[in-house]
Length: 203
Image (tube, rainbow, N blue to C red; front, top):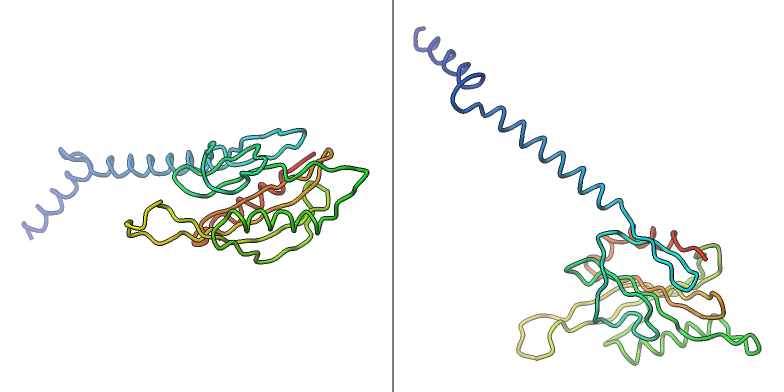
């Protein structure tokens, strides 16, 4: 009985007033984790507004300007993406539009597809569909292609399959392409982000 009483007293002393009040440490860790989670949610919820030639859209604030890659390289206006990944958004001019010589959406889609097929390794069109972007008629072209992360054949790395969507739209006498793409294995993770970007487009 004495041993039991001593053990309980020692336990109470350790928990409430001993030399190592671990409950305080645990509480501080929990508070720190909650604070970190709230901060991360706050940062992820923030967006950067972009205004290009009278067209506006928003993308995640943590994204930054990126170089390289293939999306939007023709007539490129903007290229931003998630740091340390190949996830990106690009906006480019496909062509000037002449009111005296109208061009159909089908022709614009064909032009974009031909350009990509000439430039991107193993480019494939996965599907096309009419969509509404900012209250205007547009066409969404889903696609995939391969990227070799290294320039030599001596690197033991497989090519990366990229998956994305080109949104072909017209504004102020020009045809634009809004491209949103990510590595195929991560594409589903960014689907909601991509939808929010498209929904933010205004003219």
